[in-house]
Length: 104
Picture 1 (cartoon, rainbow, N blue to C red):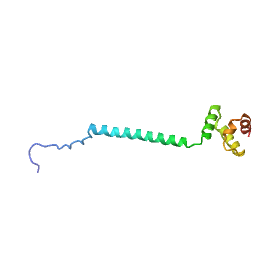
Picture 2: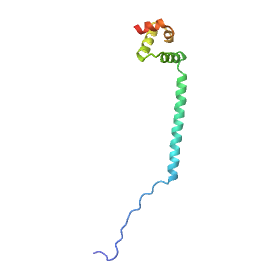
Picture 3: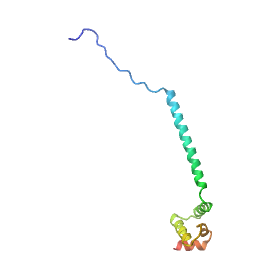
Picture 4: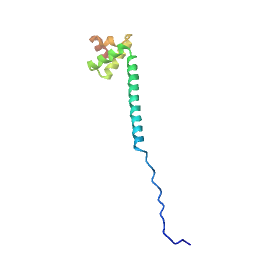
């Protein structure tokens, strides 16, 4: 049998959320981590870029300024390899060789 008397309702306490200060600190860690990642990535990219041969960098820059598309650049590279040139830069410097390379 049930006891006579008032009935009490037991309500579980809600879970406590993390204090606002902790959320701010973790956000700072995330922002600093992203900044460090971007800096390191930039330094490695710069270092890798400097390892490329200067003739290759010049070739890329000239072909971009001259407005060649990828197919034409590949044709110039193939022509330089077939002509046993050390760099396709020599082909780009000569209009006659460019015409020959693009004609093939």
